[in-house]
Amino acid sequence: EFNVTSKANDDDEQRKRYEEEIFDFGSSSSMFLPLTTVAIVNLFAFVWGLYSLFLCGGGLCIELMLAGFAVVNCLPIYEAMMLRKDDGKLPNRVCFSAGILALVLIVSGYFFLK
Image 1: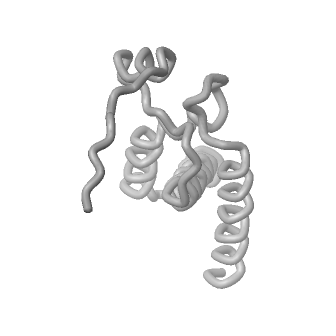
Image 2: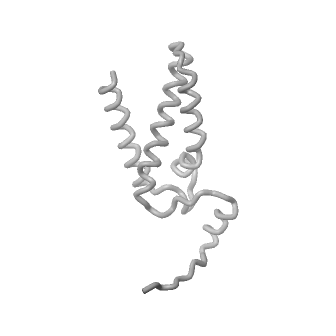
């Protein structure tokens, strides 16, 4: 049996975000955890690459450009994590869990790949 439901949206704030072409991360979904974790790891890789380029004279320019491209593509996620105060921001539970998971991945990668 197929139930017909109304897809009309009565939330004015959500409609305003849609018209301004702003991502809406308000609903908690398991899809946001890996997305946010990868965004945090990419930001760490970009910052670490800049550090090694300027202070250590590393020659990983192509890798740094790739990490920079990933960081630019993740800007809406960073905005939803830190800057937004409306209902469309990422839930705090997802941000905290992604931060812990990213920390575990970075530390384990440091010890296993060293």
